[in-house]
Figure (tube, rainbow, N blue to C red):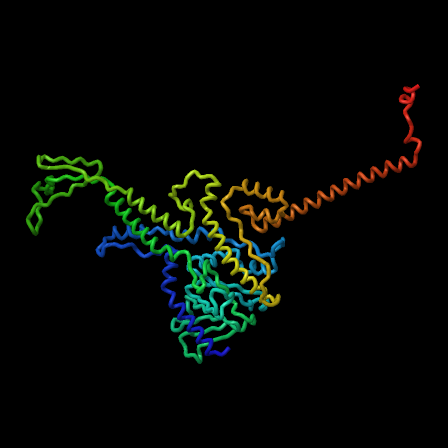
Length: 486
C-alpha cells in the first residue's frame, strides 16, 4: 500500500478520535467517580464547597461492575470436547486470565475496546502478541461496521507521547503495522512499517451493543443525567442534615455582658468608636441562658424533615438500577430483605438475560481473537470453526443446590465434565482434576471387578478339575443318609 494512502487513513482516523474524545472522556470520568459538581451559589463558602464534594455518590459505576464480576472466560473448546483448543495456550501465555477484566471494563464503560493480535518478534514471530486499547485513544474503520468481523484499518494514538512537539500514532491495516507522525508532511509522515503477513487488519472490536449503523453504546453514558440528579439530591440532603436537621433554640431581648478591664474594673471601650465592647457568650448544650429583662423571649425553630428528600433520592437510585438492569438488592438500602435463594434468583432474572446478551457479544469477539492467534501460529487460513468461548458460572446459588442439580444431571446421562461446569466456583482446572480422578476411580473399579471375576473363574475351574480326577466321589451318598431308607 502506498504511503500517501496510509497517511490519509491515519489522519481520517485521528479526526474520528478527536470527534468523540470529549464525550468518551466524560463517560470515563463518570465511571471513575469524577463527576460534574452539583449546582452551588457563586459565593459559596468553604463549608458549602466541602459538602458539594461529599455529595458525589458514584452509583453509575455499578452498571459496569455488576456484570463485570460475572464475565470471566475460562475456556475455549469445541462442543463435546473435554479439552481446550490449541489456541488456549496463547491465552495463558499472554496472561489474559487477569487482563480480560480490563478489556471487558473498557468495552462496558465506553462502548468499545480493541484487541490487536500480531506476531511476537521476541518469539520468532511464531506466537501471537495480544494487546488491548480503549476507545478514547483508538478507533477502527469498517466497510460495513455492523457486519464485518475485522476492520479495514485501525489507529491508536498513545496518551503518553515520546515527544511533545509531535503526535505519533500506530496504524494497522491488512499489510503492516505503520508508525505515523500525524503532524508531519505526508512525504515524511510514515516513520516505520512492519509487515505482519496476516492478510487482514488484525484488530477485533469488543462492544456490549452494536446497532445496524455500526454505532456502539456503553453502559455508563445513558445514566449520566440521572447520576447528576442523584448528586444534586444528595447535596440537598446534606445541606438539610448539616444546617436544618436539628432544632434551633433562640432568645431575643437579651442584654450582653460588657467586657471589663481586669485591673481597673471599668468597661472596655472600642478605641475607634468609643462604644462598649461586649463578650460573646459561649453556648453549648450545657449552657443555661437567663434574662432579667421581662421583654426577653425564648423559643425554638423545629428541625426540617428529611423524609421527602430521602424518598426522592431512593426513587432516583431505583431508576438508575432499572436503566442499568442491575438487581435492586445489589445496592445497600434496598427494600428487599430476608429473601430466599429462589427469591433472589427471581430478582436477578432480567440481569441474567442482560448478562447472556453481553456474553454472546463479547464471546464472539474473543473467538475472533483466537482465530487470529491460530493464523499467527501458522495453523491455516482464518475459518469459522465450531470452537466456542466458555464462561465461568457465576449464578446466585448455594453449593448444596448446585451439587443437587449436578447429581440429577448425571442421572440423566450428562457427562461429569459438563455437569461440573454448572457448579459455581469450579475453575476449568478443578473440573479437569475431578474428571481425571473420576476416570482413575472408574479404571480401578473395573480392574477390581475384572480381578474378582478372574478369581471366580479360577475357583470354578479348580472345582471342575477336582471332579474330573475323582468322578466317583462326586456321586457318593453319606452312610447315614443311605441307611435311612432301609
